[in-house]
Length: 68
Length: 196
Image (cartoon, rainbow over all chains, first blue to last red; front, top):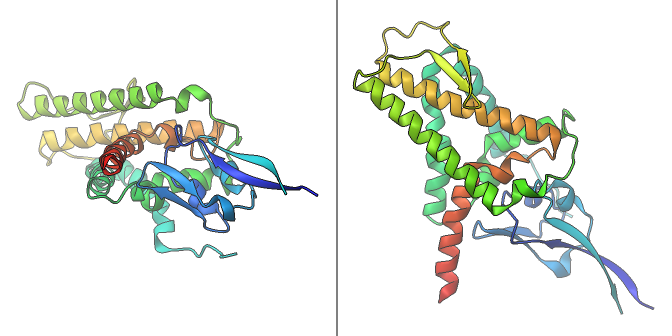
């Protein structure tokens, strides 16, 4: 049976690298890559959505995917 | 899960509020605002990325607290045009142009062409008289720069508070000229690094 997983996705083109997502991530898996954009360890993300809520530019979305 | 412990750098918002209050009592404190200009740039130039925005920016922390703890924000998505490149870069150019105009006014007072005006200009339009503190003993150009700089800091705070209320708490960070400028520096360094 397929499982549904939620993961955060960053639109790096519009990311302002403010670091709001870094502060709220409960797993601390988000870093700011060289001051250019937010980068997250996707395999560890649980898709809680806290980063998406905090992002002032609303460039983080939570995508749902089916995994075997 | 790890819990984020409060650090000393989480209280930088106190400095931002103190700065704005000190300017009410003595405009010369406005000079301290130069730190908010130079520190982020120096950090970005020496390869520290946007650490200033990420950790030390008191204004960002202040807006976040106002929006979340005081619940002053509507928490809506920011309009797309405010995060578009043309707006962010356009606002940076406009902001820097206004900064140069302010420096030129300071120069005119320094050279004696213009008299010192004890006025704080809000949103580059509204002239607010700021003459309740005696600054007659101060060199006029030093005071003029302080009035000009405090105008910039107060204007950006007001804009930040307006967008904090209308959209998400830290909406100012999206179009903050210092943030845009430091990100540009970081982008240039990043491109250089990834080229090889």
